[in-house]
Length: 494
Image (cartoon, rainbow, N blue to C red):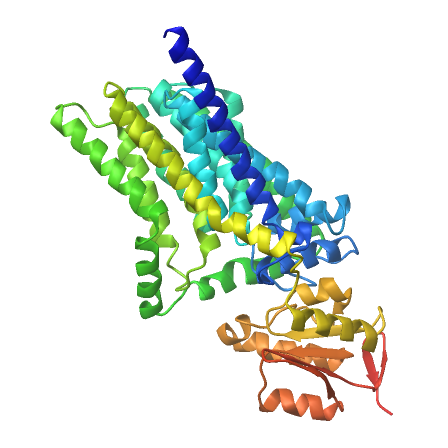
């Protein structure tokens, strides 16, 4: 490389890392839980944050507060609340997403790409991540660094034959962490562990499998067992089984038509079809050269296909589901560049297209930040008005309930939920026993204020029974209050 080429590469490298850094900053700036701006009041993130705060007051997830995500989700929000009630989650998200960005860079490096190209690939992956982030604090976000680290371990094993005890233990620990977040994201370990098994048998390295498996299981057990003991000791084990396993099986039993709609949405997403097309091209090039197709390439396409199908199981399609697909991009893009390394012009064009795609993906998230932060737009006006009314019409010790899916209201009004259920939609439609249990708890601990997104005869009966009257009404919801003597949440009627 002559001096001129060296200077050009250095400039390219600097630009690549600047773009990668910029994508990371844009990602963090989208987090309304942290910086208090929002294009929408995200349901899941505020439920998790509320549970984390209540855990600092001695409550247990599942037992004292209903939700069906994995226990590590609540522990992360608990640790965040210990750091700082309002901004602790931002600190942890910077750490979590920083690790993710690092491994999105390191995976192409393991594939043999130089630092500049690896940074461009990581930038494109992070840019796509930005475009589907949906404000953060999701289980998919928390699982991403564990997934990417393990993918890096598997990549280095298959391409460079490198493995050691430390990596095996941490890879097992990563699987344990993901099992404690959402089990259907564990496809990567299932597929690549089978691929490792086949590779070791094919290469007559079967003796290495036993220590591999023992170290892997040791790492997984080190993460899972303490959490199981924590749940059991605090009396939440049965509630955990009921909500995290039994309820989630019901939640995933979607109508075939809804699954078909979700499947159509999945197929059109670039994070799905781009890697599959690239892998198809790579397989074709191996056939053309009459070269053996790497087992890792086959394993990778199975990983993408199986994980993609699981996205559709619930019959719904949200952008944040596809955070789990962010790892799909790094290896195929890196291998495509390597495949044409002898054709520099093609490589330059391909890398340029990757960078351009990344830039285009960051435009919308960046404009959202400009609109909602710089212009001072915060929560929707009707939500802000209702929260002010809740603060005015109730005391801090009064409890409220939200019959809908607005966990943000509890946090913004600084009021606790009167029941175990901080949200009602969609769970009351999926399990009638939850609907009945919700109203039984309301009868025992009648809230001062109820926020409603919908109404029916049973709700009207309850409101009339306890003399509720409307204190706020908007297009999407209304709030009612009772003046009955609420003491510690219990009703003593006049």
